Length: 150
Image (cartoon, rainbow, N blue to C red; front, side):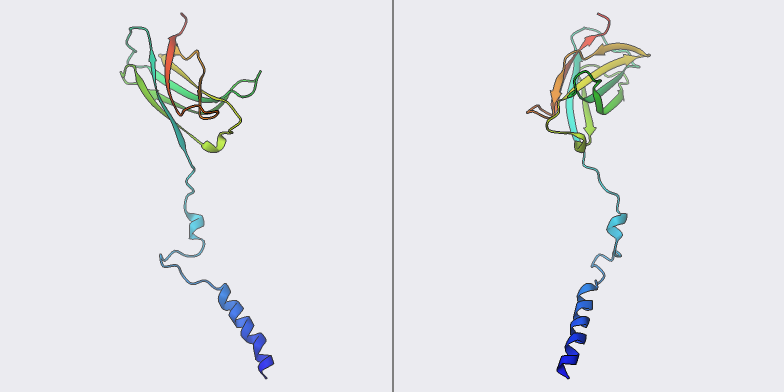
């Protein structure tokens, strides 16, 4: 008789182990799948300046880009960029660029590039590579821009 009850007892223990009880927070099963996923983000900070003794127009806009320049003979890949209306701010101009670290490969080379425009005209640009992130390079840069067309 005992041998007939053992399989039934084992099955009931197995079913009991597979069931879940409601969580203490009151969330229904699968609620974590409904939560928005937070994408990891990282930042590069720095300042932009130039040597000329001139004020920027009130309508000036600065664009800062993070570029992957690893591949030769191919245009750089823009990883991320930020464009800011300056509203009369003058140099030195602080910036923060937020990017997805999932797009960064340790073996690649990344640089920062910046431009200042006003009324559709390019006023200043970076003409030097400012390496960042990989290969021991920092996540903070001070960029010296050159006047365009000079």
